[in-house]
Every structure is written in C-alpha cells, then in structure tokens.
Image 1 (cartoon, rainbow, N blue to C red):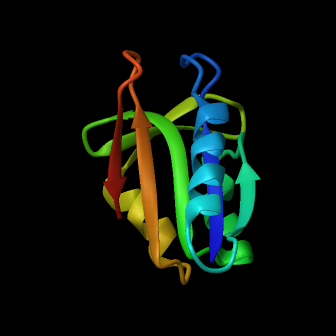
Image 2 (cartoon, rainbow, N blue to C red; image 1 turned 90 degrees about the vertical axis):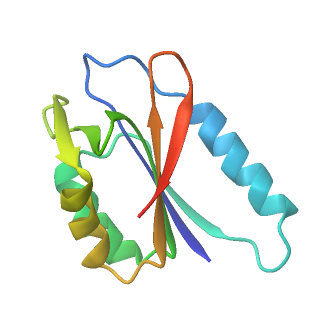
Length: 118
C-alpha cells in the first residue's frame, strides 16, 4: 500500500499537528497486518503541486492535513498564502490519479479534527 501524506498550511494560519499525524499513521501501519505501507511525506506542499505529486507517486491513500471549514480546505499556495479549495475542486485532483481514496483531515483552532473521505 502506498500512502501520500500532504500537509498544507498558509503562513498566517495556526500551526498544524503534523508530528502527531505522522506518529498516528506510522503506529497504525505497524499494527496492521500485511505488508508495511510505503509512505511519502510532503509536509509543506503547495496546492499547485498536489495533482503532480499524486500522479507521480500513484498512492492508494492520500492523507491531507490542513485547516478548513465546511466543504472547503485552506491550503497553502507556492507563496505560502492560504487559499480556499472546495471539496469538488479537490476531488478533481484525486480523480486525475489512480488513488483508491483520500482522507482529508481538517484541523480547527480548537484542536478538534474532523475526517472526511473523498
């Protein structure tokens, strides 16, 4: 299994809990049966490069950590500015590549996270 981990955070946004995400993913992989997953971690990827990285790595799972609100993510662009990306626009990135699914994790300022499958 190939897992692409992307974190995207504009310079004016509060920080993400990337270390905790990576720890949770790694622990879950160790505890699962079967072959160990192949992880690629891109903790500061601008949204303009997401489609290219998905196409190049061909992951089975895409995990994204970013700030967001209902039906949109706030991703960083190449100048580290926060840009709103709607769920349908993001789904276009996923559809272009042969991924089996994506797990979006929206982190809110109160440290609660919500997970959404695409």
